[in-house]
Length: 167
Image 1 (cartoon, rainbow, N blue to C red):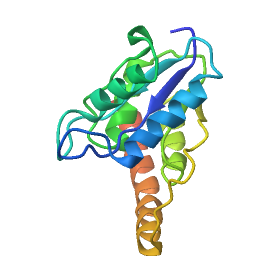
Image 2 (cartoon, rainbow, N blue to C red; image 1 turned 180 degrees about the horizontal axis):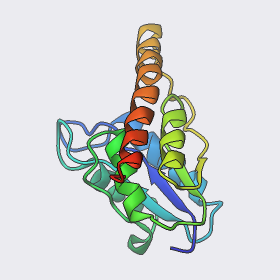
Image 3 (cartoon, rainbow, N blue to C red; image 1 turned 45 degrees about the vertical axis):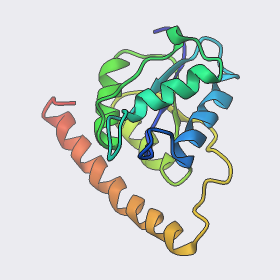
Image 4 (spheres, one colour; image 1 turned 30 degrees about the vertical axis):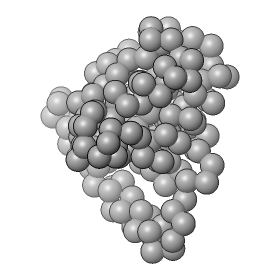
């Protein structure tokens, strides 16, 4: 893979199989980022969550609807969480020298970037989608606290996996 890659981290799929607001906004951010990157490869991630189909498949459908060629999309439909998605993407993009851009919500971006870099990928940030903050302060603080706990936990797990050669 010679060109840059844009990894789109998954979010919920609704019961009727349509994308949640967060999922749709992450794809929109990836497409906007990709417009500045010739020959970008889009890597939507995420398996089947509470509702099918897989998050990666729903994102691939959105990418095609936005005019992205099928040949520029490489789905990673096995990830069940951020860490497993990063591990799967690291295997897919092994040896990638061009930048790997992370497309996700603003609150999630620091963890994604850290994990991608720890996995040996030259990670950069796609500009986060605008207006993605939760509207209620309790919800915003829930996500902040969740990420505050998840970042060191996932980083520690990834470090252990790397040391054991299981990345």
